View 1 (cartoon, rainbow, N blue to C red):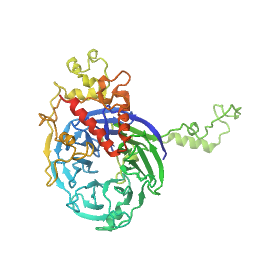
View 2 (cartoon, one colour; view 1 turned 120 degrees about the vertical axis):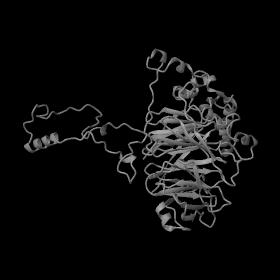
View 3 (tube, one colour; view 1 turned 30 degrees about the vertical axis):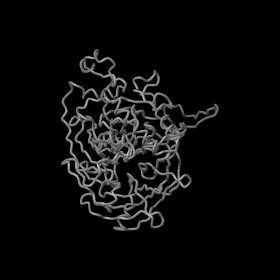
View 4 (tube, helix red, strand yellow; view 1 turned 60 degrees about the horizontal axis):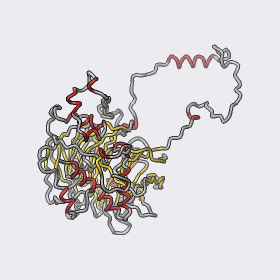
Length: 559
């Protein structure tokens, strides 16, 4: 494995905040600052679909196992389930506090694990809209993160005192537990828990800036209050880097961690624990999210609202095309064999001839489709043939009025100026929801009541609690929009910075020629981030970056 260099960027027009691959790595869902979910076809590197999901920024995303559904959370405490093919919302859940993480059950499409701020994790059942609050170790410590294991049989939770609980998913009973300590009796807060797609290993990212790798089988063997030893302890001893986001490679053999201070990715080999490579992005940028492709050595990272792709440096080697192919530095005189160009080789021996005939008569099976091993789990022999690997894309028609089979002129003419600035991919997806389109059933919204959970919390993406301006922004949807989430006719504007160091964003439609939002690549946004980091306040700059853009979208976008 040699991840060597950046392999381009994906420009989502608006600022990207989080990204996640589907199970096969064919589609990449990106949650944006203006509430949209942009789904990229990762093979063609083109936008396959845009879902106008939320009004507020999207902070967490997760694909279902079969790829047909997508759950998303926004900073106004709303969790929504989406049908990927149609772009329709199936149902919504309103929580009292911001959502830090969402995760579909790896095998049961009816269950979703939700981690709200200052609350115990919640297990949602989508079919009947019921929820179960998971038990915690200490009721006074509700800074809890949680994750399903690889098969979804157990839920692992971790709190700010370093205590890990392993719960049975169906009964919520405690199966095993242990405490993460820093050498002595001191404990450290758990920031995240991530499982490998293959094997039984998982990692724990803690506040002491060490990534610990454990074997799940050993945890279950040790039982309650066990003392398992980590397989590896990964850290940056030189710079003491805190980690923003960690994950395993598709085969579980490597671990990547994104720095919380800069756009830098550290890659370790899990079996040995050695640092393989450090990938450096643009200086001054802050990392928001990292995702590793499920089956290929490709990493995506988000910083300054742009999705960067890191891949192998492909070197063409012509000698690999045929076993007897030779690369020549200069012309060589070729000596022809005596029977080389004869129609029939008289010197050919009889056994070779029969061997050739046998190969000719052998039947080749061209109808059976062999399953792709990388797409199957270790306990599966066949692929899921109902899975959604790709999204169909309608061909672009330049002048639909001249096309007898195209949409009627009335429908094709209803394109707002804002949609024109968002590109053709956005236009195609927004037309069905315009006036005159087929009526869609309204999504059901369920309010989740959680006892003792503060309702004035602000999502970390938006700002620090106590900031009066941030609090006003998190009161939910704007006035007058109650009950109109599905039919809300708001079209968000795409913003970009006016120049490299500018702080005042302007709508992309007003951008000078040659620097449009669709081709800008987020250059202006990067300048704004660099200005914020120069003061040395990394975390503050990170929050203000999203918070500013979020507020500008709120003020300039709605009418």
